[in-house]
Length: 305
Image (cartoon, rainbow, N blue to C red; front, top):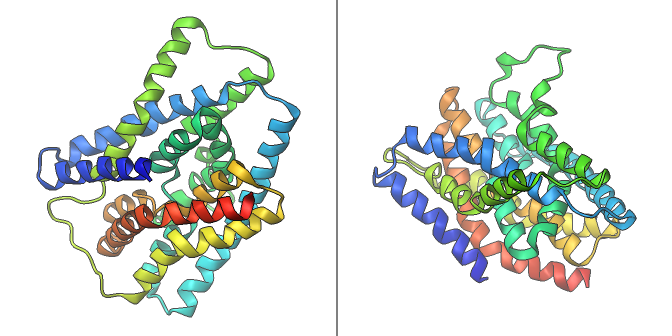
């Protein structure tokens, strides 16, 4: 609980700095780029280099397969949600994006590290791998479909810095290599900055001087409930069916329980979508996550033994 309180405090600090104008939009984007392109890959690379055993490989494969099934279920739920609740056509992709993806990089990895250490980051990265691939392919065209060329697979799905960090780290582990001394220290030092900077970046993108929100739409609250409570509890039983338990179960559920990604708000503004709706989903899901994640993980412990 103290970790979640600390995480929330750093996010709130970022939101205050942005809302008060101490950090402007351009500086906020710069912080986000540093986190996404430098600090997060360093954190992933640092956690990927470890002693691989048959058990570690088997557990990683189980996490990847079970997460892929959960991802498919979320995709179908998103499709059903926008039809069942008659979401306007222009807003459908925002809801589907928010149900399908979460803030696994800037919020998920710092929490996984704080609760489960570097090994937890390794398993968390394995759990979000299917999400990461889809996020960098289909996710990149959901809110800007005019950029997609039929029959062309987006190379960013597999050629991006986080995936590269996973690939390099796993290769080093399989070959029993370690990063050269100064380089290893450099990566380890930068990886330590990922948690505070990443969480600050979330706050900087959460709200700005001109932000407006729509709290009256019931569909918004249903989506937030799905994102932070219903989906993770449902995923809990799915992951148990795959034999996950203990910390592995908690890590897999954490990946599903995270709030809507800030990217949905950023892309909505950039491509003329409903930015008010996107900002509201990000803000409410982030706030609700602070209150739901502790009971969700506690339920995991009861269920997973």
